[in-house]
Image (cartoon, rainbow, N blue to C red; front, side, top):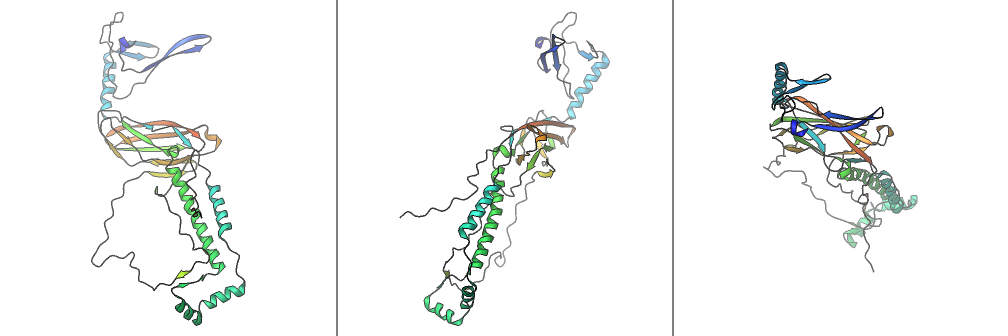
Length: 351
């Protein structure tokens, strides 16, 4: 067959059982705008090389002048048609979200048990508050030096601990999103390819991911934990007040100009579907462009089946038509390493 029709026509033969009989079925790729004219390559019965054929319902005949004009129009329309494809980079999987919320909650409980102190009796608390304001104590501190003993009541200290744990749990929640965003199996990485010898301008890609959740890390940089409260019993250094100039510019100086923000993909969560619109890009002939990675997690609802369907469509400003397709990503349990989520306690010096 290849000797007669060449290798530019795509076709796929297969045998199909029909009423107990094996039937050879040949599926031919459908014609597209811009397809070339395919002629007979070798003599076949009474047909000489160069003959054009056309397919009619139930039969294949030699092309008439009307058919040849139709094929010419198909060829010419391809000059202005968009022809791009999109494929997923790397392993085609999307993992479920890792269960880090329970780890964060248990860490908060452990921190409160470790740090919270029994409250002072009302008499000792009032003595500490009144003593810290007495002129006699001020004179004593002036004689003892620039350090003073613990001034907080246990209630004030416990409030500091509670605020620290609450703020830390928020940071750990952000870190959990950052771990997912940097995990390859939770990233949608798509590559856009120009299949032609022509450049395309302002190619825009829109994607719908069915059965997934968008994970917004805010920033891919590791978020630090808030400063811990000073341990109970910490002696406070007395320092003179000073004027802070932070956030001010020197006289005659101007703030540095900020770089122009880079266009990013727009992501919207609509129920259990993620809608993504990537910024337009220019594509040179046969060029590839890696689209911005988007952090996602597969939805656990059973009605979505075993795959996450990624449906895409693309248009361009200098080409007609719309290209589209679907990519299936397999669902998988999370393999995310959560050991980095909770900071390790500091090591104590060995004696």
